[in-house]
Image 1 (cartoon, helix red, strand yellow):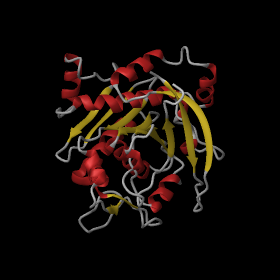
Image 2 (cartoon, rainbow, N blue to C red):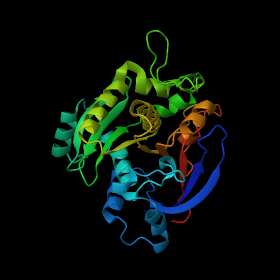
Image 3 (cartoon, rainbow, N blue to C red):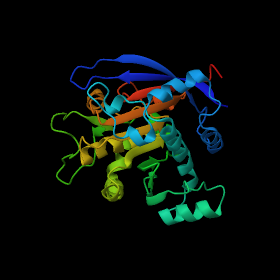
Image 4 (spheres, rainbow, N blue to C red):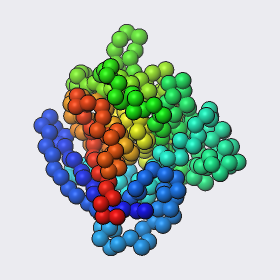
Length: 317
């Protein structure tokens, strides 16, 4: 059943000093990350929604306009993402779990066409990369032509994720891949103290996985430079999606807007990481938290969140 949820937006200044404002919006979203629920809501669309729920969507940009937004008064990072894009990334974040055990885009397409339990990709989607490596990192890169016009990097979580989060040996490490000489090319010289959860970082950057993702995304954007660049994921996949969005912002530069919508994301990095990421005006990060889900409250207080929190509750259901 759909519920009334609260949009809690944490806005930080782009300068060195952190300021916070709180704005509240009412949205219609999902009560669970299930294919059945997401299909039902996606099919229903906006028809029949109470009038007071439509106002935030009226304020947000359309899918066609969204990736070009960002002004001096309202940077891209603070622009509410479109309803249709949010639902699309929700579905993909759920659907990728059905592809466990597969090893390529061809497998994903074949399984989706032949087996109703393996949810097929959207009918007009192209799969550019599917990887499920020995670290248990599961990621796919897909694109859709107009009117959707996007390329998306989508991650899944892992079965033993809560054990990882509560492990007493959790450590920080510098953000991004580590080169043979011990340097970290994605750590900006102006922010040398940026550190993130070592396990999350390894899931994205160890064994060259990020560069496979970057190559697939670059190939799409070279052909379709107007496409939106999206990242998404659930649980560990949510953390991976944020790390990837920030890395892509460095790879493509400040003129490329990147939208990250994720679900049940744990805390990722230290306060230097938070300050750096929240100052990226071209990266919009929206973290959906379902009620009292414990994962977004982990790991311990040494780790902090970035971006905007969308706290969902069934109180008004």
